[in-house]
Image 1 (cartoon, rainbow, N blue to C red):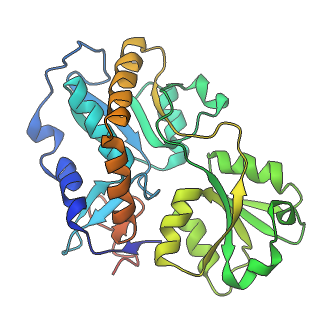
Image 2 (image 1 turned 180 degrees about the vertical axis):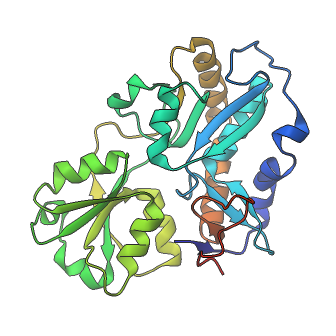
Length: 293
């Protein structure tokens, strides 16, 4: 599902970080700390741009997309700190683990939770954002759910995004319900909002659900879902200790000086407005079949 917004002035400054020039135009960075990266002089970051306010595409008045979200602003901050040119590679979330396992990217910034199972593919940065998990439904079905325990019903069909911790949460808290996995959070929300949908509810990250609710008031957040590994981390190429150390240094500086809080505030404003969530077409445009109008 795509969302339409009017960009506010405070968002323009963050967007400029991504719209100024492409890596090919800018050339490799000076690599201030002589780090070993996938591509010399570049910081290669993989992400899944279907997860506002973390990462998505903001649309200008002509419908042209630019990467946005607080994860993307943070990626640019870290690249600048390291003296590297940022190169972002968008993909579906379920492909991120495999790409990191193969060592094809330096960082994964995609609203990642520090699930121990992911440590086989990547190392984790320090936690930089205390996110929460939610169970959601739509207003017409809200009366069926009084609390988290009420989701565990064989009559319900529950969704979660493929490859995410939400799949595990669904299996833990709603084991008797039918679980379906969809590729993107956008697909889940779109299916929930269908008037004739058989989907009853879904597990989604709290801020993502809240961002959707701004544009779709029919979406209903039932409750918070407990999760032991709360918070978000950056995935760092396995065994690249120097990169991990400097990423943490940059990350903590960004948080401590208050810059990251500004990134979050701007991303939340953008997520309430004109944006597209999903993969672009081969020409770098919003697919013509989208409903972003």
